[in-house]
View (cartoon, rainbow, N blue to C red):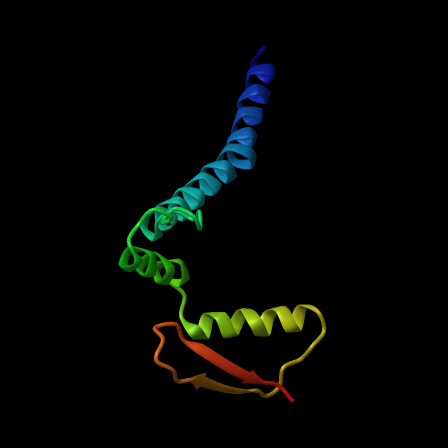
Length: 110
C-alpha cells in the first residue's frame, strides 16, 4: 500500500512538472500577447468603416505600430536566411526618407 501511494505521488509530481507547468507558461505568454493586441486595437481592417477620415488614418497607423526595434527585425531576417542556408555576410541598409509616418528601409544584399 505504501509503494502504491509513493508511485501515485511520483506520478502526480511528474504530471505537474511535465504537463501543467508548460501549459501555465503558455497561458501566461498568450495572455501577454492578448494584452498587446488589445492595446493596438481591433485587427479587423473594416473596424473603422463608419469612422471619420481622421479616425481611419489613426487606425491605419496604429495597425503598423510594433514594439520591436528595427534591429530585432534585421536579426529575424538574418536568422531566416541562415535557417535556409543563405549566409548574409554583408548588406547595405538605408532608411528611405519620406513624408509618411511609416518608415521604409531599402536592403541591398550582394
